[in-house]
Amino acid sequence: MRNKLRTAIRGLVARAEQSAVDANGLLILEQEIREATAMQARFRGDLATLMAHAMGLRRVVQRLEDDLSTRTQQARQALDRGDEALANDLAGRIVDLEDSLRRQRDALAAQEERVRRLQDAVRKIEGRLVRLRQDHMEARDIHVVHSAQRAGARASQAVSQSLTAAEESLARIRMLQQEESDRLSALEQIDAEASGRDLDQRLETRGIIPNRTAREAAVLRRLRHTPNQTQPQTQPQTQPEGESS
Image (tube, rainbow, N blue to C red; front, side, top):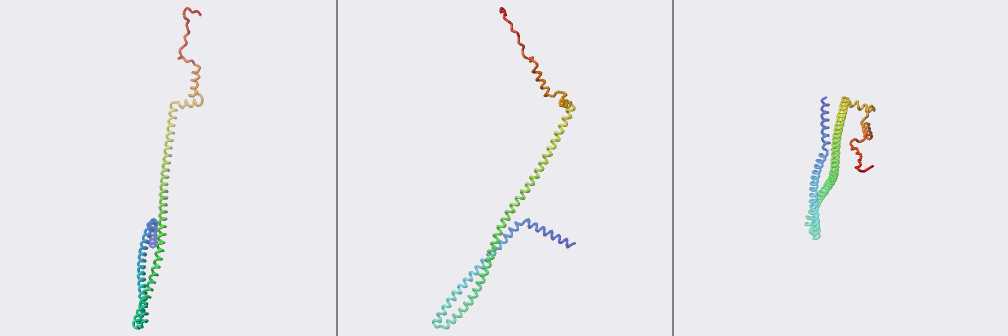
């Protein structure tokens, strides 16, 4: 049981570590690129040191070659003059120069091979760094887009929730307003029944008593057939005295 518990704890720790790595992927990638760039700078420094050493070896080789050429020419001149002792001394010097030249050429060849390998490694690393930086920029752009999309989705969800809440509030307000309208209608109905208006309305609906429209029509008919009592009556004209009809 304890072994399983320790295994579970290690699993939880590994999961937490992996989650932390995934959540900070871009940050980790940026740091790794910085570290690789620093290592690349050190490689370039090492390469410069090797190249400088190779340049020194080339100068040594060139000096030995020049010295060997000079001693060889001097030995020939000694032989031409019949100076065997001087020619033997120069021959010994030539042998030493040839040995030194061979060793320096071997050292130069080895150094140039190391320079070539390191140059190839530096070029490959630089190419990988360039691609990695480009991929990092693309990953960062995608991360920005995804972050904007997530933010937009959260904002859309928040707006949708707010609109839903507002629609529910509006529905609640309309329901309360309808209930109030129904209550007022009920009160009007109760008041009408109490005052008798409801009975008059039902009588008008059934035609037992005339409704307002019918009464207005009756008033107009009455007015048309009734003379206007407010107009002055016409007085009969009298004839002046002395005139006969």
